Amino acid sequence: VNLALFEQDQAAWPVGTDPFFQPHRAAFWLLVALIINGLFYTVQMLSMGFRVVPVTVLLGFLVWGGYTLAFLLAFRTLDLLEQHPPEAFVLAFAWGGLGAVYFAAPANIAIQSLCAKLVSPEFVAVWGPAVAGPITEEFLKLAGVILLILVARNQFQTYLSVLIVGAMAGLGFQVVENLTYTVNASMHFPLENQVYPVLLNLLMRGLLSGLWSHAAFTTIASFGLAWFMLHPERPMVTRLACAFLCFALAWAMHFTWNSPFLEDRFDDGFAGTALLLVVKGIPVMVAAGLFWRVAARESGAYLHALAACFVPERELIRDDEWVRLGAPVQRYKVRRAMGKAFGAPARRLKTQLQREQLRLIRIAGTYGRGPQTLRHEIAVRRIRAELDSLMKMQP
Amino acid sequence: MPAIVWHDERMLEPSRRIPYRTWPGALAVLLAVAGYVGGLTFWNNHTPGSRPLAEGQTVAVGHARFVPASGWQMDVSRSKAGQSLMLFKGGHKFLVTTDPWAGGPDGPMVRQQRFMERGQGLRIDGDVSDFVTPWGLQGKTFAYYGPKLAGRFWQVVDLPRRSLVQIDFYGANDGLSDALVEARSMLESMDLEAPL
Image (cartoon, rainbow over all chains, first blue to last red):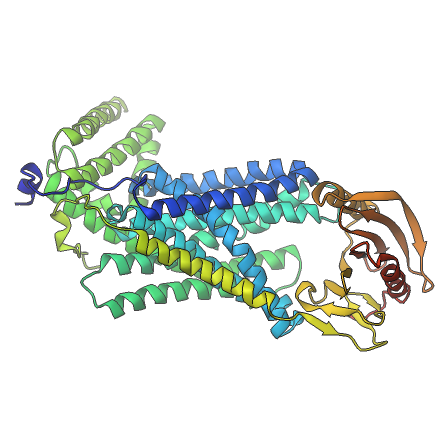
């Protein structure tokens, strides 16, 4: 019945999903306008930094650019970038790094200033970052995710599709914030050296704090948003409660991270500080990991259902491949095992095969089987034939 | 682990590109962001941040302590406990900052001058000179000026404590020389013996 729906489509509206370029939608222009506004602010800020500490700014761009690429590579390895077209990730990253950062700066300053005035400067020195950062930054990052969903809401069919956009917005915020901190630290660095501040910030903010920072917080907050959006059958109170609870969890984790909690248990040296960051970060990592896991399983169930309906041919998706559709880590392990057994070309082919299968299922699920999926069907068959012949050639 | 069943029974219906309005949602997001940031900024701007200082009472920041001149008040929102203390009187500011010293006696001074010249568009007036206070505090100082303000910067390096103290006095040209006299008196009352 459903296949017939695709084949003999008589409905008023075309089948398909909306692209993220939506010049007729207010949400798109608001998102773009706020990103451009943030871009001017960031360029102005960094240009001042460039005049004072040019080496730091250039090296900072290089280091934090590489850091971003490492995250993107990890996302790509787990096939998370297959969830959306690239422009979705560009918009999410730009919102986090430019739009959200622009608004976060004055709001954080105002909260810390109010705390100093209404409580005391001593209170701000200890609790200021914990009070100001989480509420402001989690709210602003999530605002961008909401705008992106408004732009093309039918692109978001699974939890995973929302989580990856949230993670990308968080990553953008994290990277631009780290670059800003690096440049500011260099401008006030006690030594006439522009390289040390970059290395210090990369070590402390990038390597020792990077995995349990903004990308993880926004992932958690985005899960509530995804649940709210994808469960219209539930009572509104339940949906709002879920969204609020996830936001509260992200806030609480960010608050704990920024607070002086446990600081007195570790010494001020490098080893003590590093240990403190790891101890405070692991719960965030575990929580974010659990949300990713739930989302991956849900996405797997979605892909299984689509594949069963639209791609039943076993030569296109074999049973073992079907089972692993919702398990990105297992797919990665299979690729690695393939590489060990048959070499790098086999691993590359297996990766291509897995991605083509995902694309085939998604496009078939959106438009039905037909000319639009033919390219991917051919690609799957071709890659499988190449892979099989490569495996046969090995002893 | 129980198998997950896809929760949305409508999934196998085709996804359709149905037009919908986004302006109410976009407006709500814009109002929420503007209300949050604007509201906080408004509240902060309308909350007084000055704290009167008792006449003759010593104030401390890090190792540094001094006696504020008469009429100077503390700007609590621009002071960081243990790190910096901002005093103000009219349009003139007196900022004391303490940091750990990391080496190179001239390093922080060079960085500060470059920050002022290239970052803030100020000009250094004359050369850096040495200074000594009646309490034996010694360091380097220079004057600077810009289109709307002028000031003087002092820096003290306390090698035994590996501590750096920077004092920045600046403000509008109107009444600057009187305020500078008071700033000098605060500097001359300064020592680095404050208990941490």
